[in-house]
Image 1 (cartoon, rainbow, N blue to C red):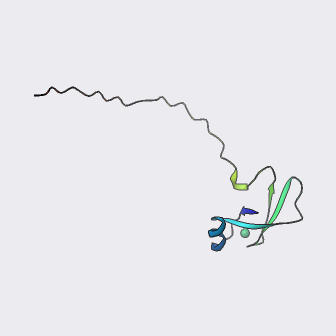
Image 2 (cartoon, rainbow, N blue to C red):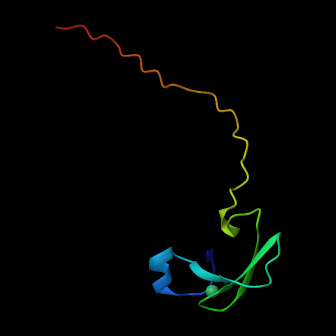
Image 3 (cartoon, helix red, strand yellow):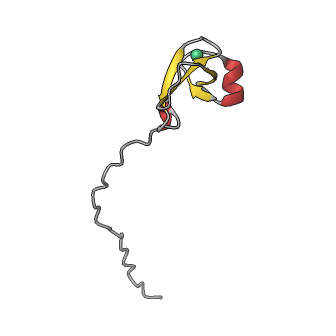
Length: 82
Ligand SMILES: [Zn+2]
């Protein structure tokens, strides 16, 4: 599985993307949480199964303030031809 990690490894950066590392599943995983170990720095990381990826959480949607649509109206003055 590919999870984000803070360790540096240019090789895996190229293969999996910057900051993404290959994790090995551990037997600490439960039905709710998956625990993996980074193959680079051996750090263990647990991810709730409900969340596909720790960093994949979409930012909370901000309610966009209703912006009045203003169309710049350019009134072209008719120039009389000479
Ligand atoms: Zn790591």
